Amino acid sequence: MIEDAGFFVMYLFYGLVFFTIGAAIISKNLRLSKIRVAHILWILALFAFAHGLSEWLELFLRMNHEHLAGEFYPLLMRGKFILTGFSFALLFWFGAELLLLNKSIRRLRVMLVSLTGLIVGSLVFFSYASSDFPIDEVYLRNFIALPGALMAGYGFIQNATRLEVSSHIGARNLKISGYAILLYGLFAGLLPSGLLIGGLPIEIFRASAAFLLLHGIMRALQVFDMERKAKMEASFKRLAQSEKMVALGKLSAGIAHEINNPLANALISVELLEQDLQSFAPVARDAEPRIESIKRNLDRASKIAGELLFFSHNRVTEFEEFDLNEIIHKTFQLIGSRQNLYDFSLQLEKLPRMNGIPWKIEEVLLNLLMNAMDATPERGKIDIQTQVKGRSILCTIQDQGAGVAEKDLGAVFDPFFTTKDPGKGTGLGLSICFGIMEMHQGEIRINSKVGEGTLVRLSFPLPEGFPA
Image 1 (spheres, rainbow, N blue to C red):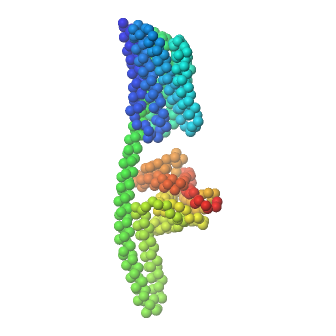
Image 2 (image 1 turned 135 degrees about the vertical axis):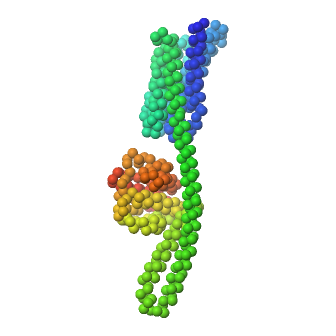
Image 3 (image 1 turned 180 degrees about the vertical axis):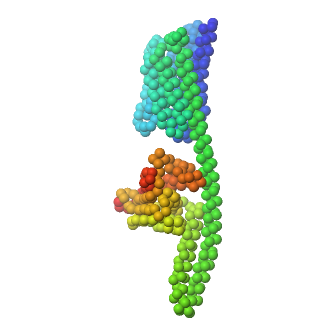
């Protein structure tokens, strides 16, 4: 009676552990996760549910074998064999998927699904062709469960190494899960059922390995909660920043209007003064250079205000033809007198008119030029070049600034990532530039070394019909 009670508790716990693993995985919304392991954990959840059910069916059969003798007993044994094999086939599939996780080989994945289906179909066939289920289950464990567990364990450990960059805790728990599956594979796939180790049945060791797997999986799943929280916080920050930019745009539009009115009046007054001075020839000759200077600066101020008004408006996003070189010149008008602090070199070749949203391209150029000026010491050189190369229109901006560390280059396009001092940058500029370039089917690349400056390369597709 005591042995029966111990057997009951052991298998009840064994099955419950696997059901808990499956429930823990499906309770998380992993579809939007950027961690690639998340997208195949559903296979592990299926394995856990199927295997938990298999162990509970084993418990039911052993506890009631005296009452189930008869024609239905072979059917239940066959069902138990198929269910166990199905669970191990899912483990094999999961392990193979983990190994192929970072390889975009569609054919292999189709073959893998087909192989899993073939294994399950073979199990059904052998369950009817053979009546020696204990022996068949040993082969099942040796040739399907053991390789599947080894692949899954190795895959977890391999992917945990990649995860260490973003989450040390998540990587550690993923490794624990990997070692737990390896242990389970040895206990369940290599060592036969009924074996005693140190006087304890092998099922105790299998259940312990499964519990270790449960611990590792549940702790590792916290990484996805942290990732989701970080995404929500980033969304709130982007929303707040967008609202701030809208308010800034409205304020800029109002300021531009207010500036334009007195500028227009001042320009009219200067023209009237110029006419009045025509009757005083000597005075007019002396005053003419000064009047021209006043008119030129008023006109320049008016253009800057106009550009600010144009830039701040929430305009339609329809594509139209424009000249990239003209946009570059307009961007310099937005920069204003600050450009005089640097040695700008413009080498702008004649370009075909391209299709896009001019003010968005202007936004890209403004962000990049401001970044170049922020990074470059005063009187430093900044080169801007445009040219047609192959099937692309290229624009490069080269500065002589401090450069970007190699470890940061992979994150420069991430929202809110910045190498500037606190309070001097939002970390949104390059992220916005990346999105705008994708919208135009273009590409932005950054090459940089610390102490050697930064080269930004914008590439736009040539308009259709233009000869390369």
